[in-house]
Image (cartoon, rainbow, N blue to C red; front, side, top):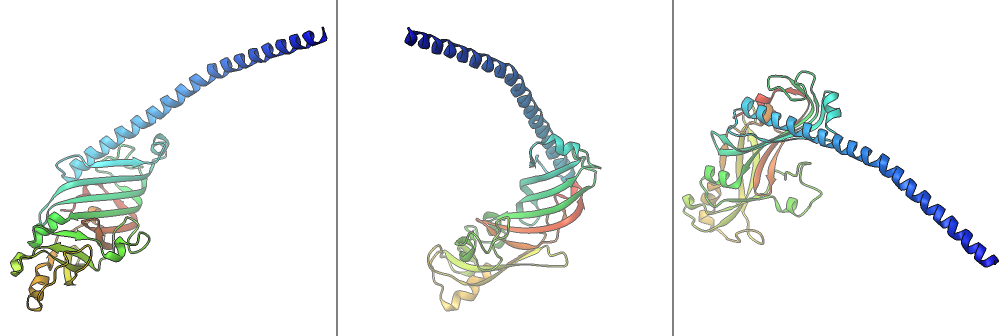
Length: 288
């Protein structure tokens, strides 16, 4: 008798516990679903507002900077709406590829802004408004095909200096640009009378009153791994090196920043400028 009574008591307690759990689940469901829906609605609204602001920014940059197409833009940081309400964006990026350039043909322009004040520009970044920027990074990028076309070596390829390519922690800037010495240019310098693929080390520098002329200074023929591994007779060496020498004017950075470094990233040549506490307008993105 005692055994059966205990079993009955345990069964009733189990039923009571299950009932409590079910009621708790129903309560959590009743409260949680609306909260989740509200959260998702808020995220969707924030995401939609960011997309709209980015679309407007791309249109404004295109018209103000005289581009033939909308650039890629991103307003970074989440959530977006509180940034807009504070009249300050944490970070935004602008990138435009295939921009017409009177000297090179086509270049890529990039700008990264940090701590952008919106008091004059509004959250939609009016193109005619001043933008105070805490830190501005500005880049002009020229690929090896257009460099080769400019210097007269159609099959030109560009590589970072070996010491930079092999060391991920040193020899490059924060944005991944190599040093400006010992870049490896490989191509066929036919105008020098040498019709074989050859690799040459090249140093980069900037000259001119506004440092907008990019100078290529060849320093020697290089052989071995990751090169054409082609020697050049002594009597032809000077002519071969001179085929890789050039001065490329008109390399003005977006927003007129003064260059702070030049080098390679992958097969591209990049000139970069970094400045703090500057005020810009969107029409300064394209300086060509």
